[in-house]
Image 1 (tube, rainbow, N blue to C red):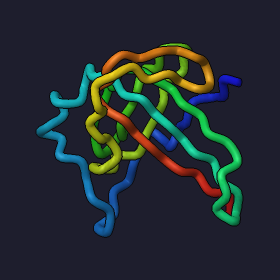
Image 2 (tube, rainbow, N blue to C red):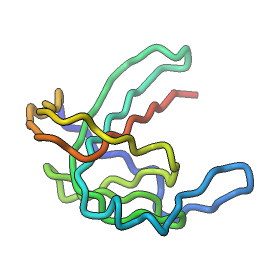
Image 3 (cartoon, rainbow, N blue to C red):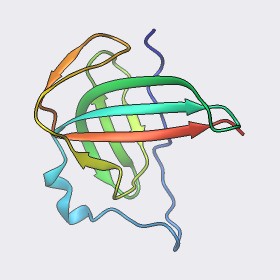
Amino acid sequence: MNEKPPNFGADWRQTDDLPTLDESNADQYIGKVVLVGVTFENAQGEMVHMQQWAGVIRTYSNQKGILVDLYDTEEPCSLPPFPDLLEPAEPGIYRLRSTGREVESPDYLAKLSCTAP
């Protein structure tokens, strides 16, 4: 099953209580490979489904968020501009459960959870 990639919005409005990206470091991220994993939970916090994608980071900004050009679809993935979202990935081969695609030594991992109301 290859579901539609996450789109958390492409026009972010920052508030004082949210941390912001350090856009001066954008070159550290743009053009790098990221694996995106989203866990979908029910209202009780139990995992219902997990989906994964891989692609190249196109934008890294507070206004546009982190935009990823995905490998297996023409549709980009729009991630929120949270500074702790991207974690360095350990070297190795990662296999996406949803597609079977193998990605060798990606640069970053992004893990998100979506909980139903």
